[in-house]
Length: 625
Image (cartoon, rainbow, N blue to C red; front, side, top):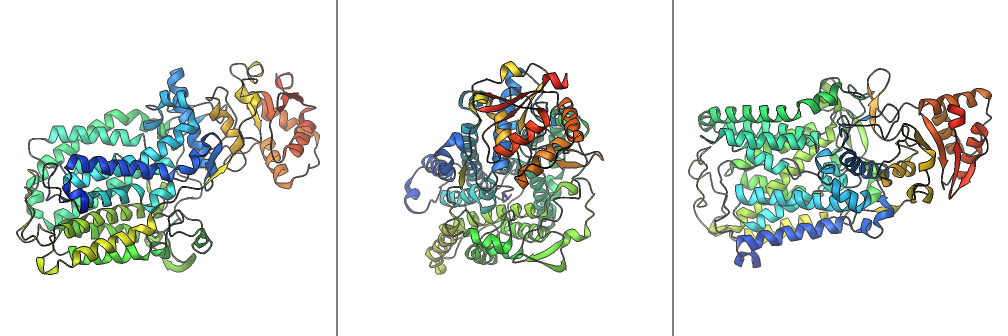
């Protein structure tokens, strides 16, 4: 999950008494750690269970095209490594223009290191394997950060880590968007930011932070931006409450921050230049597509669709939006009560309160929405120009992921406070060298002995609030495998180097899911026209997919109508021109619900096809030269 908040008044406590509730209390910390990680792995497998039932031929029911895109990305990583090509750009999709991979969600920090496994197992297996692994890894690094930097109770760290790794918003994005699940570096980044003020260690801390930031850029820049904004708020909130401590740590903090920025810039300068000024780069999205997507107020207290208590029918009311909060009302009540009880005694709780309020309001977007209805009340984004750099590409609702992270850390704080009920005085944990300890009477979140009844009640409240949010296996749907002609290599004699295979329908973000998988599942050995990506239009604005050419538009409209339109010589001339533009050598039509009308259309444009293996094939080399 994004942006776990470390209480800077506490230090790593790996050797301290773990104070683990229940059975775990008697375990050594290392055994408790292994149990926590094992539980996260089991939960990651559970979330992906429906994919494993037929991993070769299943995709996400909610975002099948995104699922196929990420399979294609794993294949891209393997292709780039195998052929030693520049992974920042590809000509295997959207031929002949290609795709700027840095300007798209390319997940290069994952697909390139895992390329050998992709070559061995295939992109379908790697997708499912990585998705569950990324969920578990994010929970694991969150657990590490919490248990070493914030709480003494391993059980508290387990609860917080589980929520940070499997929060409703994260599980929602797991439906076809593993880039928003790949948050395992973010807890490490936050923990390192809050150590930048350590005297005498500014070089080391800056170097480590710079390396982490540089690597995160190749995983998900948007989540890195959210993390940076949250860290800025955390530092400012701390500075307001501890001005003298902040001033004392300012010099090493700023020095380490400078080193981190220099290291990250050195490692990513060329890729970032390529993203914004390289081939097929763009400026903003046409019409500010994302700017209007704010979080519905009702979503905060609604149970998420993919949880034990979730109901898909609720989307008919609130709408098909990203479920970045969707905490359910019990968790909202528990979080409010926990903040009320902790905020006076815990600096970390006060900082979390600032994060929740600030990012919760910011996530509402330009217009306030309630229960699926857009009101006339302006939200905060109504006063922000939508053409500002960075802002133009941000989706307001995703700011709520910071709120989810703050809730996860709050759950760990609350559980930890309950686990130490009955003890007096602050926990025996020395303050770090970077920031002095809190003032006496303010460092502890222990529950006084006279209020021990809070422990069982608190444990029960947190557990009952989280149980409805336990994720169910993500829904999956079958998808037709590519034709045998494609997978067996029957296309090779027809597609020489420098030419493309044109599948029908043309790959796109709406119509071309099956044919896009032809490319992914054959290791991208042949280039295809168009595809599913973001690229520039004639004005340089970002648009989804390639601008439609006359022939692709004709194919899509014929599919939608289900009948053959009246064709003219102009249609046939445009078809030949489009095939020349695509550098086509062969047009291929496989099994498809609209196979009959599509074959009729292509025959009317190009002449009679050949039946080769299990496809209809038009060898267009004599037509296009």
